[in-house]
Image 1 (cartoon, rainbow, N blue to C red):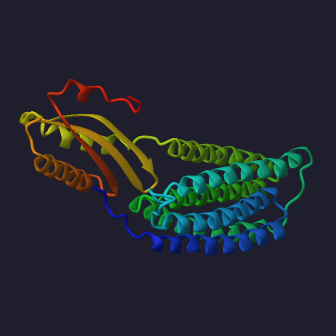
Image 2: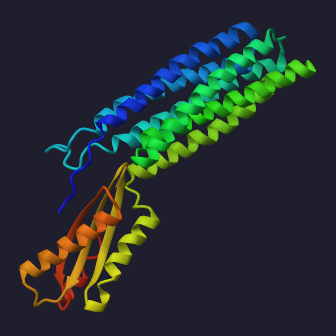
Image 3: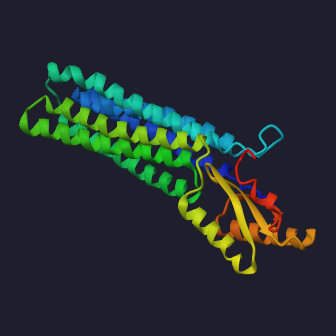
Length: 304
């Protein structure tokens, strides 16, 4: 028995919110760069362009993931969220590369900066917008188990850290007059967001490779199955995988061979209901086997 997936069409509104934030911050950060000439602020503006591309990719992924299962994609489209998350991780890596390309020449040939106070104020405003949107997306991503929204949120948070680092660097240039601090801070920020992009790519790849359900969720499932041991009922061949917001689980239940088909069916229904209650959005498939038959213990592997 399977559980009907919840309607997730509404999640696209969060992607639209991210797109709007990206457009606003691009304008603000570009303005900050134009008034100051800071390569740090330029790198910050370039990352916001990446934010926009990532938000559009998130919107497309969420719309596709919300489609119902069909004959061609019988398990639904939820794995597209891993593709979107991986794309976003790649864009973060691209942003770090762009920062390095723009900052490195300034280490060799530093240039004076202008109107730093105004530039920092504009960047701070853009950073506050990104922070607010990121917190909204992160909360929604965790609540609805959307790796796409969570990835977009973490991307925006890296942008917040980028802006904070750039503001500090520009502020130090303003106070000390040491122009090379501007590209140095930009390079440090590039290293930080490089790590964030790597983590997103790693998580997306593990999801596409059918990583198992989280240990705490598997623990809850095993506790349910173990509770039947005093009744002489055992289990084996427990396998699971994640597909973004959904889990898929298969387990073989070893029951007395004297049970009728109806008894086995009712027991399987009970186990599946308890699992879905403990771990929502889980598709459970059970297989009933007679515990007395030695053949029942020979099918634990994926390939018998």
